[in-house]
Image 1 (cartoon, one colour):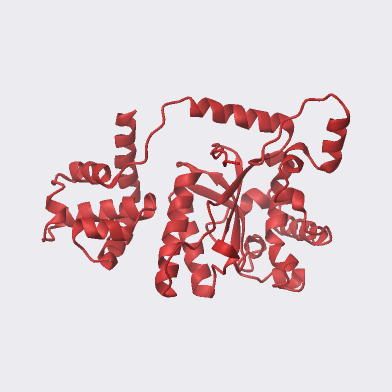
Image 2 (image 1 turned 60 degrees about the vertical axis):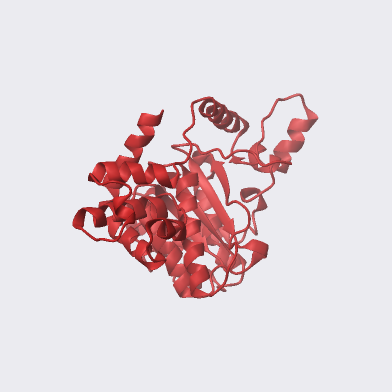
Length: 337
């Protein structure tokens, strides 16, 4: 069966999962883990995502996020492509790192927000990576430790979670931890991670009741929520699909818009030379192409006649003016509508 289009809904909760190809390990050491977290933090800094819960497992990871100024697909493409590129270089491997597309589920926040936070953060305990909640409190590769402030993560939206447990921070943390301890007794909770109709209709009991009667119900494997919520999200997605879509910009288009903004010709940035203006244009182009759009740095290096290492360094320098470059690219997108 063909895969349905993503429900890239703004203003709602997304549970995102990405797994290594053939269930292979994607985090071989702490350097790999810190690299992915650094990339997630940059997406938060760029206002592309808000992150409420997360966990890094040996061969997969989970994120519970809200979408910011860009579609989730663009943010995830940048995250996964950049991480895979560095991973392959570090570990001297070639080929795909992640299995197929990442998986994303639109979630009904009022029904499932706290359950998903708890489900995601308990992954290391369920997998036996830690033996007790006491160990989970200090485990650095899940957002649980950030919520308890044992391993602070400034980019994680901890206040949005803790505010649901109380007005005072100490009490809220204690109530949250009690909630997690209670969840440790509930098992794997497959209804929160898969099950198609089960996920959309509210569990096997709800499904059996619906099938015995004449009630109409809606299900969608891309949505975790009530039938009404599923129908609403699908309706919004249908409206957007009828709107004129923007095709992802190609390298020539991005180069043209950056060069126009900097007042240099596209040919000039491909020729030897390193004036201030040309360096600025290369940095903007490298940032947009490699980090923002998540495209191949090697392709850009070949086009500019530079070493790949020079392109990646330029992209990092371009990050200092990321707001400017994103506005420039967005203005080009508006003009194309």
